[in-house]
Length: 144
Image (cartoon, rainbow, N blue to C red):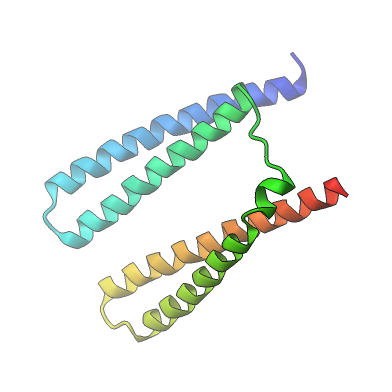
């Protein structure tokens, strides 16, 4: 087996292991949500559960792209929707500003924690959109 094939097999194995951990996390957070009546605790567990579900889906896309067929992405795929992505990114940046302002004025530790979570998540959205922009630039260079 070639070194590249060995890496792919190992990556798939590790991703499947990670998926198993995410499934346990989803079960644990659901159980904690059932056990707690506190809205803050329940919200935190719901956030983690949802993130674990999304992680599982991303891991599956990675596994599928390794084991079956790579996920194609062309410059045309992005160019047809890029104006919409830019508009969405502008909204993300606006929301980041709002969250930063709210976090500065928050007085409750729970409010601060939830606003900090939201701010981190919005910054993550902005980051993945920037990564998409870098992929778009790379695809454009390849097509020239």
